[in-house]
Structure formats: C-alpha cells, structure tokens
Image 1: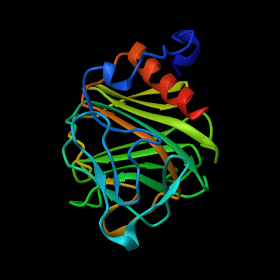
Image 2: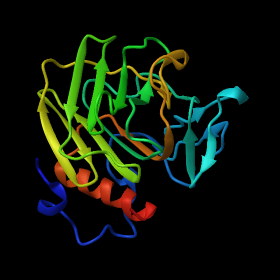
Image 3: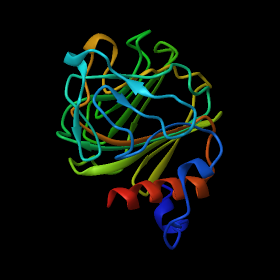
Image 4: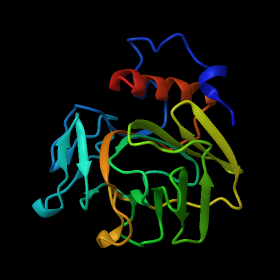
Length: 224
C-alpha cells in the first residue's frame, strides 16, 4: 500500500488546474459537461465522445453523469496502448456483485471490472483474456462514490481507490482493447449497476505526483 493521499498530498488543487494540463489525456468525460443519454462529450479536445443511439440501451442522467443498469455507451477503440492511466469516479448502487465498468464490442474477454468475487476486487482481462489481473484491494468498495484508478506500466499495474494505491506485478505487457462504458459485449457478463460521474483516460503511465493532482481535482469538483 502506497498511501499516496498522505505521502504526496497537496494543499489543494489550484483553481487553474485542469486535467488536460497533463499530457496524454485522450478522453475526458467531465461531470456535468456535455452529458446526455445519447452522447457524453469528450472534454479532452480529442473528440472521443461516447455515444448511444439506441434508446433502449441509453443510461439515465444522474448527478452530472450517467446511471447504468443494463445500458452501455460506445467509444473509440484502441485509445490507449500497453501503458495507460484510467480514472473513473463511480457511485455503485450495490457492492456485492460483479460489475463491468469498461468492456469491448470485439470480445467478451477484454474488460475492467469491479467486485468479481468479493466486495474489494479489481478484475482486468486483456488481449482477449490472454492476461488477467485479479487484485483484492485492502478495503471494500462501498456504495458511496469513489475515484478508482488503474495505472498500467511495463512491469506492474497499480490499482487505486480514492487515496489508497496498491502495486501489483505484471506477468506480461499487453494491450487493452475496450470500447464500451457500462457493460460488456451484448450485455453478456455483469453490467455496471451504478452512476459513472466522471472518466479520464491517459495513454501514459502518470507519475505519482500527477496521479494525486488528477485524483484530487476530480474528488474536489465532485465533493468527495
């Protein structure tokens, strides 16, 4: 456990700070900005909007984000490669079931999932299931809102919940292919049951200092 919140905490994020001040931002679904059930605008400047044209698959608006049950939003595939940093602020409706936050239209075996078999688990499959990371965090993911983080490097993957980050060894370096927010392909496998409040994707492994800046900025704007 690194405990970045205590070791690297700042005295508060500057009002002039923005997530796009840090290079590598490829998608930013900003809370309360350009959000609708048919499209959530990308605030990164890269035009990687998430969309859903099918009414029956559209999530509901909630708290400046989107409330998912058996819904999904589509975004551009291959936004990141083998190294990346994802932040996603999510308020879970339940914490005792497996829930897929990101999935793929190409395969059911590329995803980032919470609570696979316990209330404190991250579960990642990459390259059509060729590599799996199943990690139990030190504390449970409660049904309040949290800022989750996954940072993938060449030699390890970091998993974070709020200001607590765990480092886990990587067996290999793989590319993660995902292009769905909310649920896996064809609703097959543990849809997200909760509200996505914000998402930020970087195509680099951010430094510890930048991780703190991004996390604290998201948390402060969301009142977490």
